[in-house]
Length: 281
Image 1 (cartoon, rainbow, N blue to C red):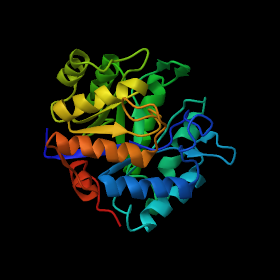
Image 2: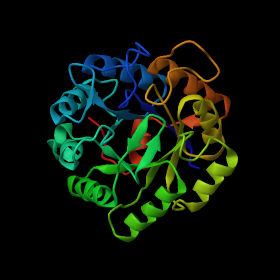
Image 3: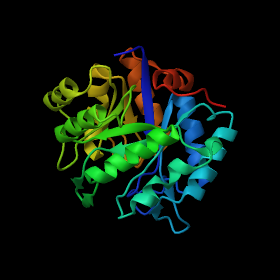
């Protein structure tokens, strides 16, 4: 574990919606407002999805460009590490998923998600075949966009090592381990210990938790890893509470836990250095 604790906020997701939580941000203005508040709370990394005019998840590069330009033009969020989703959760083609990687440099993301296998969520599958994963990894290398490596089970760690051996993923390795999925690693010390023991030794690791697993994931992250992931993509409520929460609520809650645990939050500039990224605007 290194000194600066990385606070990563997953602001929107591909499935979360306003019908279940009105605080889920869809528009550029809503996401930027949440991002400003999250950075003020101590967040250094933002994981972003975009929505169409009807609020449906999409991979439209023009919408990503609009969002990332707004984030970089805002003094409060200009240095935040910007991670674009390349999700295929709703059957998007490889070309649609990779389109964000071809944006002009001024609006290209710093990083992009790379889920390391297919998996089942409670509501349906996410298909990520080996050839698709390799193609996305090659596109990230070519574009100079670092992968945010998403791990849900030990099989994904095995495939990460294969990609490293093939030269498709280069250090520093930033790994988000997501706990509590119906068909994956659970939020308990044994599961976390197993995945940490199998990751590359120099990996920079954050833990996130789905739904009720989020609170336990926070505590395990504070005890054993380099950062945590929070946000309404993963959970609509603060751990142990019934009221609906917003991204700023979750960022402030996680930051408070980090301080209570004696973990110093990384600034966006420090996060960039650790993740091997250029300075922000």
